[in-house]
Length: 326
Image (tube, rainbow, N blue to C red; front, side):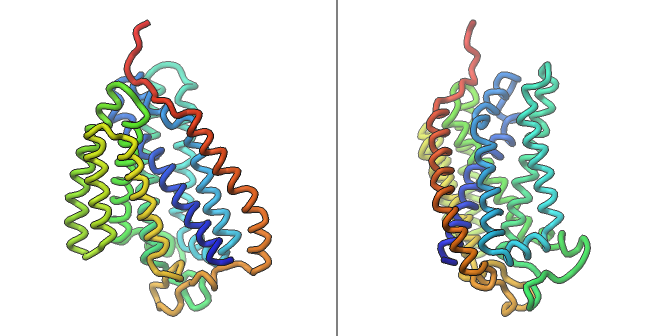
């Protein structure tokens, strides 16, 4: 039962980072790939039907972690409460920018919304990348599973490390590649051409950077990411946007799984003493709680997956970025 629910947690985080990853990438790219108000509007419309549904997986990931692994949830939240609060505020800013973009009059209002969308998306992605690095590096856990330290230092120190800086940079690159391949797949006209060109350059440049990092760290995961980056860029250049996007999604999914399984049965390492690390068994809820959770999960989860798949099918057509003569 513990392994089953840990797999559900991993699935929820994978779906969140993949689906919201291209949302964040599109938000970042709007001012860059859209040269006027019409083109920027086309960029935003590609994620209009999906972004709030994609955020359901963040709620699911956090909710399942809280219900199935309460000790893991408590350690993460108590050790990272300021970054988490910052994420919630940035998500609110992003949501307002998306929802209110079409409520005001004139291009100036929409440019401001696009700017808030781009900045908040970039900050969210960077912060998530830094937090994922914490999942690998760990927190200052004591023998009782509580996080040592107090005040700002306890909450901010874990994301102010070189590992977190690399995580933030990697997350920004992944979001940009996801965003460009998604826009190349979902738009027509000038935005599609620019997205394809940018995906090509991002794929090649990212591959070079990842190869250097992979050989420097002897990391097979980084070398695999370099191969994915290069292949995605080449596919986008050839006009095979669907394959480029699918490959990028697979690369992001694999990276998230690798992060969550980096330490095997340990879900959160202790930076103070390895023997104080938090394992799945120690973090899990009681068997009766997991059984009750299963009864609800087997009904709700398939319904959410089916509904979201249907929404993507309904809104599968490309969004035109070119101006249609009246």
